[in-house]
Length: 127
Image (cartoon, rainbow, N blue to C red; front, side, top):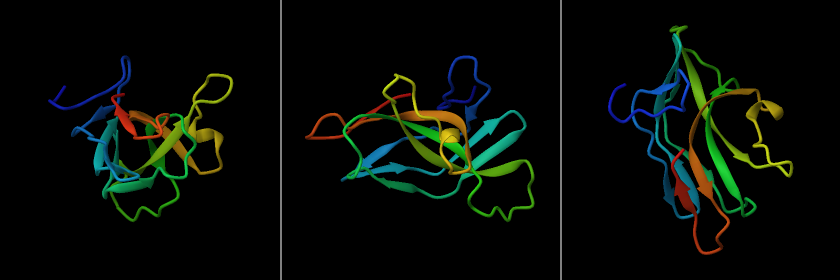
């Protein structure tokens, strides 16, 4: 596996460059990334900024998803667009899944966690 890649045990997902989540004020900053899964690549070509100020204090998973909402004009059929989904733990203890919402995306890989349970700061945790 190339240096800087991460994947969950037993997962064929491989990040082709390390995804370094950052905080900027009340925003989660997700840099561009490329994820390989099987024979398909998923690309997020630009930085994503997620405003955290309106979220309930809780622990959230930051999940890479296949993004079906944006028109992909690329002729390369082995590559699709990616996006990011913040998943909150439900009352039954299970994590929310992107597929449970009418947002037309599919979970690809875990990028990390954001802990908003402390009033004085946000904390980034590794996957």
